[in-house]
Image 1 (spheres, rainbow, N blue to C red):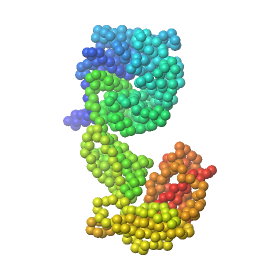
Image 2 (image 1 turned 90 degrees about the horizontal axis):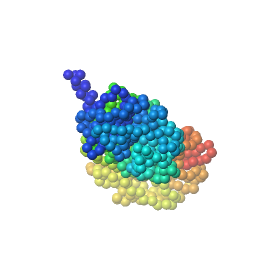
Image 3 (image 1 turned 180 degrees about the horizontal axis):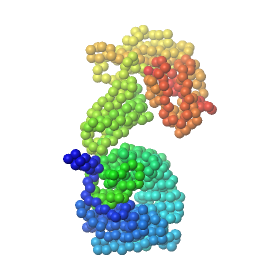
Image 4 (image 1 turned 30 degrees about the vertical axis):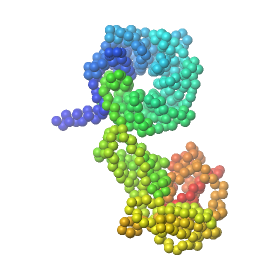
Length: 618
């Protein structure tokens, strides 16, 4: 009984929104798979190491091979179709390899085949890695034995059995490609990038853009339904490879959006897009379906391990997937386990994302911990430099979100979410008032400014000024009203001074429960006299202000030599020095030893002063 239970649990773990209908074993290994249909039947066209198999999959529960085309012993076979013809590339460098055309017009009874080598304008095609056929009837053969393994463009329209060469691309080796609206998207494996090429004039191609992929091993590329997003796979068993998404709506500014890594990590092979779902052959992990409707967060919503006895980064397991049959069934080829037919349950994922800010200052909060729990499963992440987080989940349910950050009150909320829900939150964390929250304002001498208490909480019924009942100090004069506002005028004084007053908030019982300290920094000509050549130019950005135990500084420069970080107090005394390489995106400075108050941080290199920023130590 225990053994049976373990087997059942293992099978359930493999089957997630993908139902296996039938499977066909072969005596040799398989490579890629494509699909084709006529008015009455659906077929799988399967590349094998010794030929091409044509399988009737009309009844997905009883599939059967109906034709077989013998060929060279070849590891790589890829197939695409045009009309009643299948075009099979063979990457095995033989005078009888290259491209084979299969006539499927009478597939119920028989098929005929024809090799294609050249139309006389190019060298003989003896090897080709892959092929794509666009909506206008042009075939793009890639990874072939000349032109650096670039792209050979064939016109299939006049005579599908005797296509003519109309264009060539030789700038780089191309492993796979995708074409839509006369734009060619190439996966340039060796160059580690994808390229976007205008092929409107097949005899004169124009490169529009290039973009490196995460692991720089671009294997294949496919477009979203709206054409605004490109999805790529990186294929390399030595690195943590992924399916990646890019915003290509502006080819002059391609933006990386997100990437998906399987768990346990395996190597992705090819991805295809249908209705914003990514159907991906993922080698040892099997067949994977990703929800790509919101491509800045890819969510795994379907999975079936076609070869559960293997795992890890290797080239074994699920090689190809085809999701475009009229029935909606998915074809998948596994190198050792043959052809699989699946019925998918396409389910949208659940998105939980948001921005975390300080409730008083509305500044973004970096590095806040995000914890999301559902059915006992907990995922954690941290907010980015803009205080943002993104999470995605495969199933609907009740999700408890907890946000924590040192010095702030914890935020917790529970949400009931259905498939496809998109929750975008504005989370404002309230500071903890242990000794007072500090709010900093600069004021020039003889200037008058008004500051109001923005602390908004349903428990507050009254806000008054009571920390200092005097109406003036040696540095300035203040008044306050009954709605929680301070009006402050700085005196004409010499030197650099800080004046402090505060708000007191009361709960429903009238008991004081927090103090908000307001710091006025009085500025005159000597305030920054040691910084007269320093420009606050945006090269660096303070991530949190007030600062508690650690100051986080964002480095907006792509690179720089070693820099010196110096912290001064308001009177210009050096309080702390730190060297940094200048290459870190986030620079952190421990401020434990600084007392509460106003400080100035300067950034300088060996050749110039680069900027300064003022901050409050809480």
